[in-house]
Length: 322
Image (tube, rainbow, N blue to C red; front, top):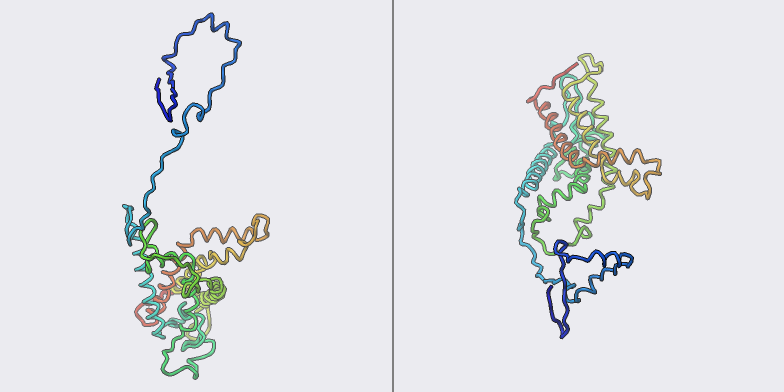
């Protein structure tokens, strides 16, 4: 039993253990068996209000310094790999675009066109839709067949929802990683230039969707070989497989786009009652692995250009399977 005093009033708390319960006379128990036991008092009736209030302590909110964190894992590994991967691809694709050469291969009757120059609007290869370099092109400005098309997949990937989070961490350190201190002190979102251009992602998707079909046509043409007499025969070469796999991987990335997922049914309130439910589920299935498709397709499209380029330069020999 504990006695306390507060504001001049005294109160007592009796704590009774089940093992220390006092003996009860059996006769009294029989006489009082019909009497109902009084209800247990509520907690706020047994204890004063001062004991029902939890103590609180105000702690000053401090902003962590740049790269400051309590994480013990190698959190810096992912942004580093992304930085190196993106940098390597950007450097190579820029160099390849300015070369304006060795982007198609005709050896052994093959017909391979690099995805870096497809569709070829103007250019020196037989694939050019409107012939060679136009006369109106400024003489002081470098010319390349890739300039007319490479901006479409570049814009599509640059505004991609996955790529945004990836290169924000890798290049601008905004943020470096989860639970890691950032360098900036304010957040403006994507409402101002150049980040407001991210809203054009859906329009880049429309263009990339068309280019995807044209790349499929290039893969189809890579299945036909011309012999010495000029006759065209169906065949499969290593380059045929490379261009076909490129279309498959790009399809997995493009058709899993968030914009297509919204277009195909994401805007509806009840997808289960929509006729597009099956298509929506298919796009969602690809979307779950969007990061994987993004990286695998990026690496393979670069390798496809390397293969066509090295075959055109005579460094690699394309192997005809049949």
